[in-house]
Image 1 (cartoon, helix red, strand yellow):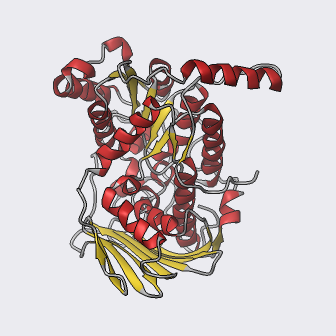
Image 2: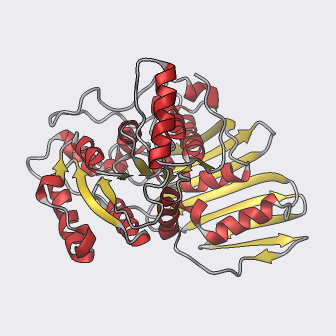
Image 3: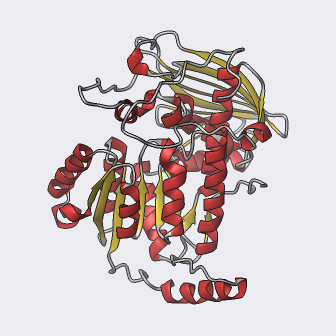
Length: 433
């Protein structure tokens, strides 16, 4: 299969259900009819859109609140999570914070590994915020059912997952369904303005790039009596590569996405790098690393130098630099500036990027021109996975190698029982990751 060429936000005309038929001619006719019917479905903004949340953790609850705030004619229709207590917490939260549109009856609160299926069925717009391992299956289910999607990053943890997402993205384009990505910097007004300056030549031709996402550690949930291996791992999904992709994929993807953005959404062709596990060595940290340093190369020869770290007591540095022939672009601490021949700094109105992505999602649905961020969210996820594999194996890694990989992370079946933790990757020994 050929990976679709990355593109910027591609838009199309409306939401509709894709009608499967026995012949190509009938399918084409069904699509045309569906488009005509749905074109004005939400045009006046007064029809309620039913929002379903899959993944009731902190990010998922935040996304649901932003969806309700983004459009006055949205209502929370269903909640789903692997665990009942997570669903109950979310239900209580929204019954209080958005009592008029956020109260979800018990019959539309679902828990278990298959909870997503029920949420998709009950919704018009689906918010995907579970651990990334599950994203390809959840995205596929939502788009096949004809639902618009807000899709948190990253979209997969391995090559087969990315291929599945790419196929689903193409289906969404054909069905005129929205996919808005949780790569939120693409929705920050000041970063958008900054990249417009770069695209207009403010720093000249880009010669090199660097990005850093060095932070402290994140949360853990101590194991409770009665938790199976699977439950413990899913509740602590950050620390298991099969669930999170490791922090280079789960968190550092934000930085890598800006490198992709600077390259007009082109994919890197290869990378090399290193990483390890120096500080977070205890059992509760599963099998992930706590630092990475990766060098990427694009087809035009430009290199991006990347590093990320999750270690307490160390200096924090979340920043990006684009180095050009007549100037430099620096992004850090929610600020950006260009220095050199064309000095510039953003002076426009500041807006919360998390709010903006939902506002634009619902506006696009109402206008019948749904946004599709699918290409770049797949490219940036692949870039992060390439870096992880390079560090885990100690080998140079190409885009083609990862794209064609048959290595699928995670168990074949999800059973609430024993699930061994894969050993920590050892460069020079680990063959695939």
